[in-house]
Length: 586
Image (cartoon, rainbow, N blue to C red; front, side):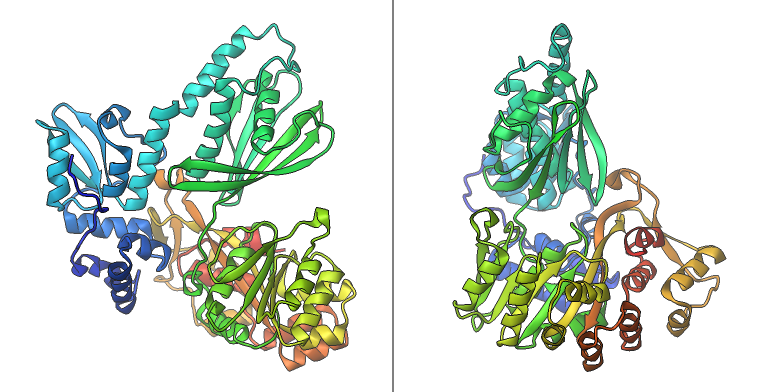
């Protein structure tokens, strides 16, 4: 093998990325900036384009594939490289040099690499596989890493299918056992592997939650993943292993395996590989038939996103930036659980995170780490609540405070007090809309005059399924579909858009492909609704006006509702009207 110690660094000509500019995926100024950032920070340019500048992976792969004149292979969980091809190769070397042998057909070896024109790595590959003809395919570095992790998982511990097969085989020999028997040991090697592999598979599928659901009698235990907001069954395991699997997860979470009568909460720190560790928040609940369900939420320690990567409507983003630059007041981000509120708040804090500001956060749990913030984990069981943390922050010279959630009147009152004494306060609330948030806080018993003075803005949001970029297609909608859009947007406001129903009026949908499991949808996009704290709105808050009055005023002042923002994103080809209706309409 080659002796180079530094990771492979490419010098692809900037013109290779020109099609991304021509097709509208990135502005030329942003591409120049990304190239400079990559050169200065020894950073993967493709990773920057995807993560920071939101260039779709499929578009980037297609562009580089054309430039290198070789096929592009995106990551596919159903494709595993031949493990035997890795026998004499260092996994660390492959990880640092960004190539992977995929399969051998006769004397032809297919190799996935991020730069098929790199002669040095080409020589290394030829020395590693003498006598074979090398056929290159282009892979993005993030995908090569995922292929390698999947393949290493196969060689190190066998596939999850192998483990399940072993359990099913053993189950046939255990049929004489009572289905509620504790005879299966939670330390059995197959159970240990299965518990770990379930977590690995959930991570590979980009699941937000894992559900383990045992049943009574001899019915199989269901393992379900929530991906892009939707639960689906991933696998089932024999009934006699349900107790052992649940106990194994409880051991990993440092919970009491003998306590089955009441709910327990815990955490798992799980090492995916040498470079990657994730945290899982674990909840157990006693269910019918003397069983226990387990729900695990994957906290993947993400980096905060820049605001311009969150696909706000331009007018909404401009208004939001104006609000967050205020020296004091309350800014709330609201929506149901899992709607991306924490991600949005951290994006706002990233915008404010400068050396001139002292920023304190109280969170439960800390999902996103951000250098420059002083982040505090609350512990309600010992009395360290959000309200208690807020009071402590006020004695710690804050400029900006973020509170994970306004769960009660006490927290809301302290937040209002903090904002009125010269601090900018961010928090979240579980409400359905921006105007409803104001009414909810007044119903909690907050002083209407103090809250009116403190409130700068309320941002409501939802996460909506995105059209798959790999198979997105245009079509001419029916007149009925057009009328639904117009009615949903509001007839008067729709006319102002000037979008008549003509032969060239187009919408978008996904045809269905392997990348999206033939659903036409992959990933999610946020819908936003921003209510600004105007003088007229403050007057209505002080008089405790009805929701309808506040909603009417907000519309007159130009607030774009969740549904309207969603329909604008339908017109832009980011999602479908059906998906907007599913998450944003009452």
